[in-house]
Structure formats: C-alpha cells, structure tokens
Image (cartoon, rainbow, N blue to C red; front, top):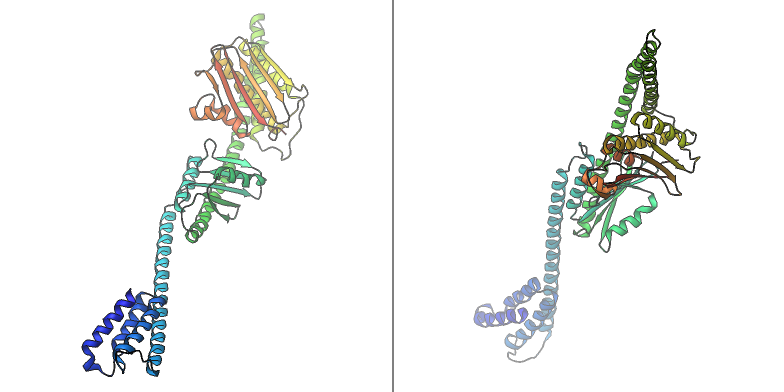
Length: 459
C-alpha cells in the first residue's frame, strides 16, 4: 500500500511539473523508491521500483501512453533496484542498531537496578545470625527476581554440606552429605525453574540456587553471578565470626575453669575439712556428728561433679576417649539425687553394657541430670524413672515422672517447643547441639521428656 501510494504521488507530481523538469522525468520517482525502502523494507522497495518503472514507461517515456519498453527503461529499472535495495539495507541496519541500543540501555538499567539493590546488602553478623541469614537470602532472591533462594556450602575442615533456605520452616540451616544437595533442590523447586551460580571464598565454597526467577536469561545470569559472590562473602564473614566466637568461648571457658579450680573448688575443700574437724570435736553429739559427716560427704559429691564440669570446660583430646558402661554413671547420679530429694529414681539402660565416648558421655549425663532435677524441683513427683535405649539409628533417653507435669498439656515436638518457647530452654539447646530432638508429653498425672540423639553423635 505504501509503495502504491508513493508511486501515485510521484506520477501525479511529475504530471504537474513535467514542463519544467523535462527530460529529468525520474526525479520524483527516486523518492518513490527511497521512501518504501526506508519505512517498508525490501518488499515495498522492490515493488515501488517496478511500479515506478512501469509508470515512467507508460506515461512519460516516448512514445507516451504505451508500453514500448526500451533500453532506457531497463537501465532505469536497474538503477531503481539498486537504490531501493541499498536504501532498505541501510534502513534495516539502522533499525538493528536502534534495537541493539535499546537493549543495551535496558541491560544497563537492569545492571544499575541490580547494583542499587546489592548496595543495600544486609549485614549478616548480628545478635541473631539465623534471622540475618534469612534476611540476606530473601534479599538475594529479590535482587534477581526469584521467589526463593537456597544456598549450600562447605569448608575444608568439615565433611558436611550446610544448606540454608530462605523459606524453610523451623531450622534455617541444616546439615547434609554432598550427595543430598541435588535431590533436596529438586524436591523444593517442584515444577519451577531453577538458576544457580557457584561461589568460592578463602574459607568456603558452594552454590546459590534461585527458584522461579523472572528475569531474562542474560540479565539473570549477570545478576545471579553477582549475587552469588555477595552471598559467598557474607557466609565467609559469618564463618570467620563463628571461628572468632569459638576462640573467645574457649578462652572464657579456660579462664572459668581456672577460677573454679583455684577458687570455688579449693573453698569447698576447706569447708569439708572444717566440717570434719567440727564433727570430730569433743562434746559433739552422735546425731550432730552424723549430720556433719553427711554434709561433708554431700560436699565431696558436689566437688566431684564440679571437677567433671571443670574438665569439660578444658580442651579435650581430639580422639574420643572410651569409658566404661554408662549405667554406672547414671546409677551413681540417681542414688545421690534420690538421697538429696528423698525420692526414688529408677535407672534402666539397654543394652546394660552400653558405653559412650567421654566427649559425648558428659553432655548426655548433664542433660539427664537437668531433666531429673527439673522433675524433682518443679513437678514434686513421688518417683522418677530414667530409661536409656540404643537402636541401630539413635540413642533414645526417656525421663518420666508422676508429678504435676508442665504448664502446658499434650505432646510437643522439638520444633513446637521452640516455636512456643516451652519446656526447659537449656535442655533444648543441649539436645540441639548434638543434632538431636527433644519432645515433651505433659499430663496432670505426670510428664515424659524424651531425648533422641543420632548415633553419629554418640560414637
């Protein structure tokens, strides 16, 4: 339509100015060839060349008003074709350049937006590192236009692969083997698209996965690479902060152990000697003598417990130290607590010869001690029982009583206890430090505290 219109315009215009331009009758028809080439492309340009040649041959080339095609018409057609093709090629090149320029501007704007978002990268090191980690992953997902971000990383000095998920309920960071990562991502991604990029820092290496990213492939690749490096740097900072915290905790534990050994432990020894001296003094009645010696023995037991606690604070051997059957440890603890609280405490261990390394035996003993003392102190039971069972997969410990129970009623899992901030917090943290699970069942007729520890922690 464009080619036909401009040829008609050129024909009418040439009729009007024919007396003044003769014999340059092709002047306006060059415009009729150029304009379709610029705005229409190759097809309209070639059509306009043909129509222009026919119009000139019929209306203006002698003999006029006849299709007597001569050599001039063929030359004119060849010139028109060359002009039309050249014009269409230049116009197409110009359009391609403009399109590339627009795309470059869009990419540049996208890169600027990405850098602007990255410039507001959240700090990962804070009082609540878990909340900071979630905030960082959600920010990373927002930067690349994704619904969800998952990162897996490992360090040279640990055999585990750690995975953090911006939308994972419960524990944000979980521990897996390297072979578990691909199935884990596939399960959480579902049917959505997944883009990822690897990162490597001085201490860590890993990969960030973004689920349901909405950006174009080119822009997404650039944004994902940039964000993955930022995620890696943040995790590296968290790793260094954790190592520094461990060093600080170790120094504090050493200082505390020295202070307890040189201060409280020695003071208890002096008190025991004083009680012995008073008990053996002349004129002390038999009843008072026996009570003073009972107090001295109680202090001796507490000193032993304190020494175990001091030894736990100090750096231990790198290899696990084997110990005897754990039933004796629990039996001694039950006898002492039963005598102090005047409440019977039953202990059952299966198998009876169950032995644990010292590195895990002491934390387990402290957990059982805390669970039993909590029951004696708060539930006021008439009896308490401790059952320890080892299966192929885990070590299960149950502390039950017939007291008043906890303030809540029913059974709560580890995650539910954490969400409701229910149950003994320190016991829950001790269990979590060993990658275990705590559950509590509470009724008006008593309570049942169950600890489940993986065998990998109990070896």
